[in-house]
Image (cartoon, rainbow, N blue to C red):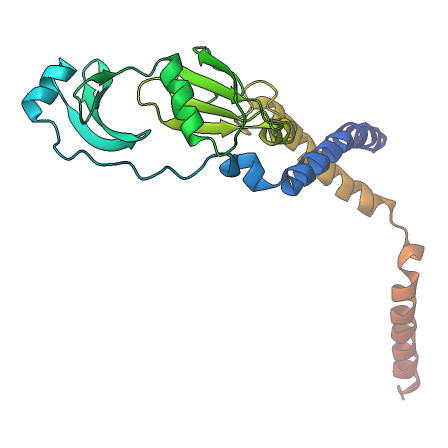
Length: 248
């Protein structure tokens, strides 16, 4: 019992610190405005693009793509429409009016980000991301990272193939992501709560609770329940006394 009590004390100290971190990180994630975290206010609704009056013929479209077309979609991009053609080599964009292929290069990515950004601040930087980091996790690479010079350092992440805005990041999200990392104890990828560290800590918490129950019952003495047991025992004694008195 001495060993259990000693281990319970030290486990309680160590795991108690983790409980504090869980409580603080959980509270902060709840307090931060989820609209700001998601970056919704930083992206405006796309303006209605003008549909092409005379869509390209399939023959001209095939010529522009220059590869077998496995799938085709007409969609707005910027202030116009494009054909998004799926080929064995990947996605190709073709201007729905001129038939010119569109490459989502640095200039195009910046223009698309400016069109999507709801603020008036200028672009601070444009960078092509080819290696994943905490901001681009779970997103297909490579992608364009366009950062604006606003106080939130709003960043739009755009596909290098389709030009679509894949995700939005800002300082509020970055702060939230730190608390998320602390909460799930994933200090590298920040995306999984099913990893050895948190499983080990959870097992330790379960043992702490079980040992606490054992120590709780071992720590009780009869006098701790005297206010309950004494009246019951007196009642039992009175019944025995009456029973003896009633015997012939």
